[in-house]
Length: 296
Image 1: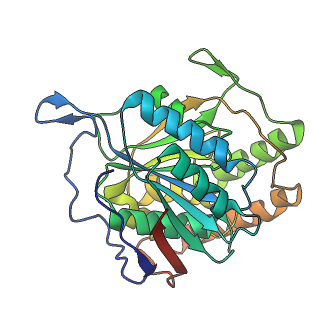
Image 2: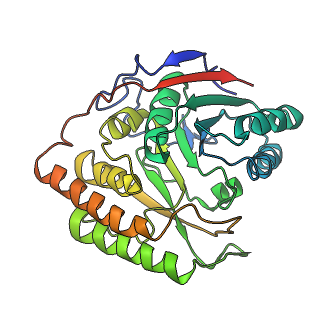
């Protein structure tokens, strides 16, 4: 599974320097000493009340791990679920013989959960990449095979949902979601200078060596945190970003309501103001969240 994740009580020991001191400049995640090697990945799944869907997600991961003969770390970052998500995940992981670790928080929202989970996992593993994967299996992990790995180990990979790719058929969003996505796309382009059409896709890979510099600068605790991170990556850290075509299969009802469009627009404006004020130039040191990282 790579480096063992240790049990911790909080995030208080996380340092957020501009870059991890263990980083190797210019190295490729798929090449070492002149020969090919597979990139190592820690799968980080933020989850809130996903009891009805988490077992299928873990089954998809187990199937992918078996087909590719990998045993990467898997971390379920639970955002204070009250529906038995943790218990179902624990039972499923044992049945599937998956190396699942649990990182549990009080309920604060996806953005804060992702930030603190990424900082914790970056500090506790030696993998090449941290993968943010939604726990609902709407974007299966098997779409990692769609990535054309860059020779630049600093590259961030972000999913872009399409109707069809690599022989897989997807479902396009509803008119309301398309309207919301279009609004976010316009706001992120005008206010942040981002040109990516799908900043909100829950399928992303970040180089672990830069995770502390990236997530340590995150301010937003709302739905626009993806766009904020991409703006930090491109405008402050100058990291390359590569899009990956993925297909989306909705399972259950969306947790994002129509009011999120207005709230997100205002939040995006706040991100733009912080850039103008230079508040992203140096990492923040957010107050450590009360959490517990343990094995199943």
